[in-house]
Amino acid sequence: MRHLMSPLDFSVEELDALLDLANDIEKYPEKYAHACAGKKLATCFYEPSTRTRLSFEAAMLNLGGSVLGFSSADSSSAAKGESVSDTIRVISCYADICAMRHPKEGAPLVASQKSTIPVINAGDGGHQHPTQTLTDLLTIRSLKGELGNITIGLCGDLKFGRTVHSLIHALIRYPNVRFVLISPEELRVPSYIREDVLEAKHIPYTEVERLEDAMPELDILYMTRVQKERFFNEEDYIRLKDYYVLTKAKMELAKKDMLVLHPLPRVNEISVEVDDDPRAAYFRQAQYGVYVRMALILTLLEIKVE
Image 1: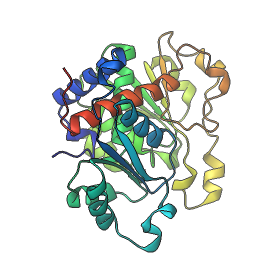
Image 2: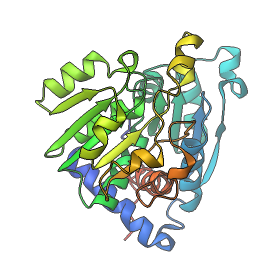
Image 3: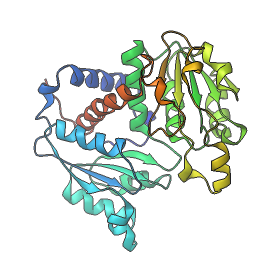
């Protein structure tokens, strides 16, 4: 039995096979419509979510399975003080696979150690968000043709942004990937990622504060929101929340084939006027999230469709 806690839980070969499966699901959805008949997915979300929770549920329903779960800690026995370990032991009696989001780093890992069913980390605090990373990889590969030979700009909250941390870990395994890290001083990538990941593996990167300075060289711009829920001080949040806003004028500085990605939800960091630009790929990215989660469910349940 396998779990997914980090994108690094899969080898590059296994990742490629997963993305191939997701592309096949995109092309031939009817082939997979009953693959999980009789199977149940539990969505245990201790933190609010729209896309991740609903895309997991859509993925399981598209596969012919069913879904049960809760959408906030307040609506579960966590409100009574039940531990994650006890919750997953009970959930294991009811479902075949579990997707868990939790505000505390490492909570899904604790659950996986006590579970008798596969557990998927659907986001743990500011740590990892592996299924968003799988979505990002599928989007880049599908729209760019490969996962190597790119310069990617990561913009916004690089300190608390779990999507950014996961994506860096995943992309450094592909050839000739260069990072441009765009953030204010207070929201820079944590030193452990800069030193233990990028510098330790000799991955080329630059850090800049102005988005305009980075735009002309990027193949992909990955925007993130400044996350209010990760701040201890509301004054800091208010000061930084509109630090970066991608506009039509800034898009004119970019390459004709640059892609704009965003894990969503967006607040103010991408102007709605950018939505009509053919390079804006964030809503297509959300659709790819369903395909990749379908592929992941099939893979962890070891269900093969000829």
